[in-house]
Length: 493
Length: 81
View 1 (cartoon, each protein chain N blue to C red):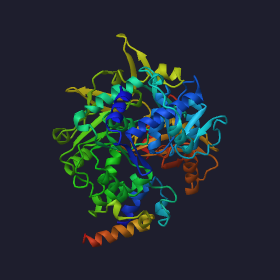
View 2: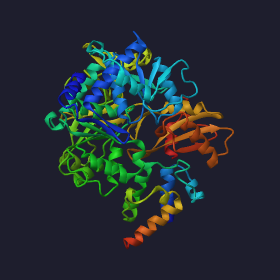
View 3: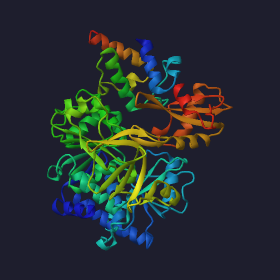
View 4: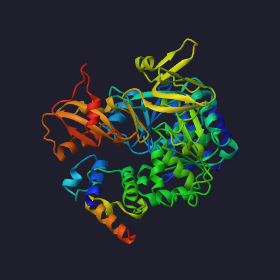
């Protein structure tokens, strides 16, 4: 199990750096010891309540102490990144509903924040993590207990919390440890962390790294605005394993210096979260001839990824879309009416306190298997899965899963907006932007009107969900059966 | 060339304001993020053959449509393109 593997790393290499960011670093010995102590503080503070604990912050090594402390105290953690809009943070924290939130940086609260919640700030966390008596192994989460909850975009405008168990994470890390290269090669290696911990892609780098006693090197959001600093940070760390969305690799490839000379130890690029294009895979192979390029696929509900494959030269030369991988051991995937259905040992127990949504997405089939409807369309060929696209109104944009209905519901919540439809603005298969069509009687269609909508949405939604293109219309076109005619809107872009 | 760059900027920003007011501050108005900058520079290379790495420029050097046009022109002259 994953905690046993981290404990082993902490026992064998207590001085090795487990996590590093510009905010500081932490050794395995400290990570293990401090999380033990913070776990007993949580037990004391929360008594018998096993309600999940929200952990607020951004790329701070102390966040990992909090994650492990939660699960060592028998509670799931729920990562909340500082870049999230205040309203979404409030939604998530209120839904989780614990009496305590762990904040690794100062958080002032926001309108609608639960008044009786105790926010333990960085000083209080550090104090507890240094001075409390360590908790024992008896309070750890059990295999079927929820280990973490990550919130994803929901079609009703409210995010939904995907529950992943201790067994799920452990099975996932067993698989990724052997993916592409063996665990002997991953032992003690340096891993890139690009995604915020509130994005489930980060589960791939975080737990593959910790399970193998590696060092996690975290790229802060603001670092992405200073390429020289970011590339130097990568070089200095001696990166060996890369985990990111393909978009982030593209961002780095725009710099001519991003190649094997800069990162001579690179062993593998592991991608998840969005479609890996042939172009990106080819450019990486040219710049890093000694490293593998690995494509993976999976929804948050199946613990980050359930298929994976090394991309070969023959695959990129074929000119067709790249495969998203072979099914991992312990998972079953089958295609039903074109839709990808997943069953197996890393499947979520469902959405946190959302039995109806859970019943809609998860079901037990005739063979007694618990299955998840992904809403993705795909097909198998030669043992590899290929992705076709979404079968509903969910899109992947810059690696983020977005329900268009979520944005529409938030638009309808703005003053003056009477009707709204959000459409992906495509360039071939690629989504280049999101466009919102709005009827708003008070707006005259000026730049100020468009900025007002964008700015108000930024207060409610993560930045990547705010449509760049705002189009004011008198009314939305309708299909004969009374639904918004999305094809007509898309054709007008 | 100016027209092509302005068209591309309007496409990336999702707003025609970049053509109406080419001195608008793209960062201050939150019209472009780091991925957008990369997309723009990759496009400039593909369209005009001018190689411009993100690390060579501060955001302030290219924060308006007019400044972007001026930097692309300068780079084309430097590369004799």
